[in-house]
Amino acid sequence: MKRFYEETAVDAGEGGYRVLLDGKPMRTPAKAVLVLPTRALAEAIAAEWRAVPDKAEINVTHLPLTRLATTGLDRVTVQRERVIEDTAKYAGSDLLCYRATDPSSLVERQRKTWQPLLDWAAMRYGARLVVAEGMTFVAQPSDAVARLREAVAAHGDLALSALYNLTHISGSLVIALAVAERHLPADKAFAAAQLDELYQIERWAKIRSRPTGMTASGTTSTPARASWHFWKTGD
Image 1 (spheres, rainbow, N blue to C red):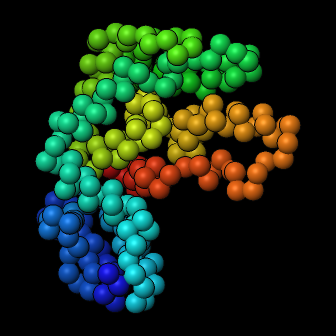
Image 2 (cartoon, one colour):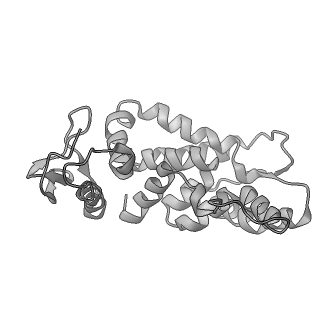
C-alpha cells in the first residue's frame, strides 16, 4: 500500500491521544481507534508516518512504534494473562542469574554489571534471585518469582507489550523491568543484555580486525529499539 495521506497530526481524544491522518484517527488492523497514553508517544508515531516519502510504499518495518502500539491494543488486550505469563516466566531463568566461571575478566564484568541490577530488583520488588555459576539450572525462590510476576501484571496493555518484547529479546525480566522503571537507560540495558557477546567481540578485536559492519549498536533489533523508545516517550 502506498502513502495515501497528506498530513499527520495528534489530538487529545477519549482516554488519551490519537494520531490523525488527514484529520481521521488512525485505526489498528482490528479496526480499533489507536489511542495512546501520552502525547509524546502519539507524536513519535505520527513522526513515523510523516517520514514515509510521498507516494512511496508503506513498509511496516519502518514503523516500529506503530507496530508495538497496535500489538498492545489488538493482541495483548485479548490475551493479557497469557502475555503476563510468557513475560513473568523469565523470572525463573533470568540471564543475570547465570554467571561464567572463567575467564576472570568476564566473571568480574558480569558481577559489576549484573549484580547491581539483581540488587535493585531485590530492593524494589522484594525479589531476591539466586545466582549460579555455569549453565546448571537453579530454581528461584517462589516468593521472588511471584513478586516479579506482580510487577509485570501491574503494567497497562501498551507497556506490557513493550515489556514482553524487551524481556524476550534480552533474556532478562530484571533488565526489562529496570528499563520500564527508568532505572536503566536503553544503552546500558543493551550493554547488559549483550554483555557476553560484546566481551567476545572485544576479545577477538585484539587478535584480528573487526569484520565490516560488526558494531555493538548494529546488533540491536527493531522491536528492541521500539520498546526502548516506548519508555522514553512515557507509558
